[in-house]
Image (cartoon, rainbow, N blue to C red):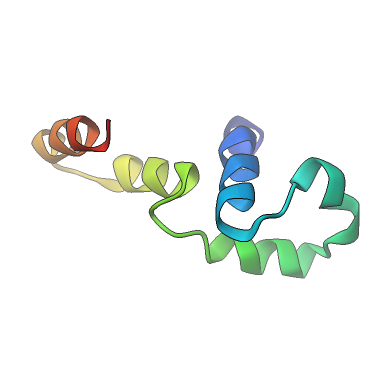
Length: 68
C-alpha cells in the first residue's frame, strides 16, 4: 500500500473530497476500506488498477494514449 499511497490520497480527494493527511486519524479502518473499495475508474488509483489488470498490451497502449 505504501507504493500506491499517493494514488490513494489523490483519489480520495478527487472522489470524496477527503483530505487523508488531515482526516486520516478520524476515519475508522472499516470506513477507509469501504471507501477504498468504492474508488471508481476515473480516479488516479482506479486508472492505475485498470492498467495493471489489463492483459492485452495493445489495449494498455491505447488506453494510455486516450487518457492523456
